[in-house]
Amino acid sequence: MADPLLLPDADSLPGAVAEGRLSAAFIGDVNGALDRDDFEAVRAAIVPLHPADIAALFAQVPEGQRARLAGAIGEALDAEVIAELGDYVREDVLAGMSAGAVADLLTQLDTDDAVAVIEDLEEDEAREVLDALTPEDRADIETALGYPEESAGRLMQRELVAVSAEMTVGAVIDRVRATIDPATDFWEIFVIDAGRHPVGTMRLSWLLTTPPEMLVSDMMQREQTLIPVDMDQEEVALIFQKYALISAAVVDAEDRLVGVITVDDIVHIIQAEAGEDALKLSGAGDGDINEPVGETYRTRVRWLIANLGTAMISSSVITFFEPTIEKLVALAALTPIVASIGGNAGTQTMTVAVRALATNQLTEANTRRTIWREIRVAMLNGSTIALLMGLGTGLIFANATLGLVIAAAALFNIIVAGLAGVLVPVILDRLEFDPAVSSSVFVTMTTDTMGFLLFLGIATAVGVGNLS
Image (cartoon, rainbow, N blue to C red; front, side):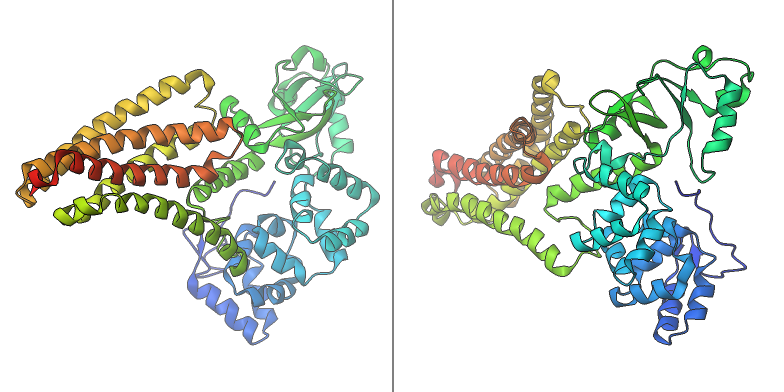
């Protein structure tokens, strides 16, 4: 795990970092030095930066400059910088490096970070890099790559400390000093039996404050949270959040210890999953501004086409009420308002429902209660909005009946929106579809269609002659 963020000294690097961000002037100076091929100036400016800031610099220079920047800074491009890079930026940086150079960087990374780099390479490039690794490192990475994507097996690191319960505390300390690489960070020591099954854990604080002659079995904590190697990373993150874990053992199908997941990796997962859900709701794809234009286009246009189709379905409802609209043109102006307010209400409920499903707050056990709760919220919201819309419409158009019609339509559409906002994600989840991906299309279509149908339908039922 990278060291805590330490900003460069202001005197040694004036203007480079302000409030945790690289300044525009500093980035401009680096670009200018690259254009002049003044690599010494580039290296002198960048070496004092923290690895996270160097990674941020790579993300902010033009794509064509990234390989040149990597060559300019030389050894400052270490493993910690590579681990901090986004997928698309890292691809540009590694493109200018030999397989041997990439392999040297991977040997400095924890297994989980090395796997993240390898899985983003093209198949032939990944094979070259793997061939350049030592047999031991290659075996570790290939084993991790054998687990499903976004699983605990991909997320875990194999570097850990495991001891027997029969050892003394003093023997454990001696073993750690003799066998563990000083670069390996760990917070817990795992206690295993002869079959490598976890039977307990020890915190480092206990190890340092316990008499050296005490047995591990007498001071270890027997209760622990074990993570199955094939568990989805989102579920792993939820477990870490729920039980406030710092690290957790990962076990295979036979409950043997195979790795460890630490909280620093979980922070990244929580951030990524939360952002991913938000982006899926809008159909914006990965949301990475460094993603190639072609990939962004293909991702977004699919959802725009889907939205176009649902919008045409909703709009077709209007054609059934053309005679009504012709008799009172005000209906054409007011119809989109009813649909829009329903759409906003549906989006509110849908966002809450999708998030609740993702965090296991919404389950089969409380689905009915949640639906009833959202209906009550929709009724309260609908009553308030209906009152305001009805009064406003009646005063503006000097027509009380029209105000009552739009108030009734708004009330019922917001209730429909609340129901759809929770039912659509729940149904999609039950059908094993990702509710974050598809919910918005169906909820929007429902609220638009019902908005048009309710308003124009009620107006027709009341009689346009009574509204004029």
